[in-house]
Image (cartoon, rainbow, N blue to C red; front, side, top):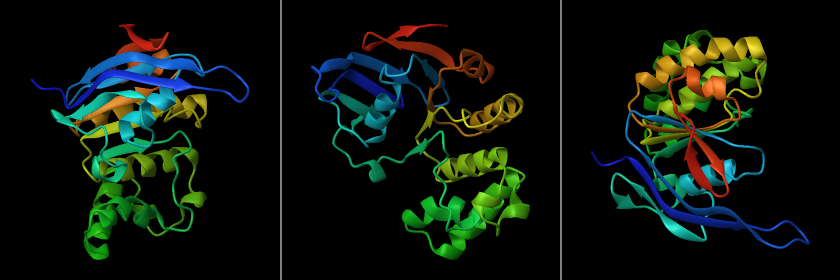
Length: 222
């Protein structure tokens, strides 16, 4: 079966101000099938977030290729890739209602605002957040904001879901309760998932394959 996401020989250099450039990603390869989740672990500064940005099309690799469903998308703009990226701070729009935050991606894809809002309300219902549809995101708790961010990511039916420390802003008790809920939603939406985290227990809890980014490459953890 052809992987939904494939990285071939990704190379990326990084240079701190006044320092010599160093290799951050050194011929990195990765394959993720639709329906599979891969957790990428590694210390701060190892290149995990940079790797996500390269996959998303927000940053260019120095060399190497990114493929989706067999198509080379290395030069494809981010908005055409049909990927969803969920940041650790959720990146919700404070000036929009909860419903319009979730509907945003559908409107960007060309759906009418009315259609997008109807689908957003249905998605919020699925996440137990329909009662907050007309509220503002800054009025929500951290866990509620996480649910809205995930609903916004999933509503566009992305081919690939990219997650950058999605639970790091939540307290320990809430992180634990959200893991199981998150795993259920991932299981119900077939796509390739790449999850950057420093929390091995979190990655194992959602059934992700574990890889560690070290010396510019990916090593199997479990």
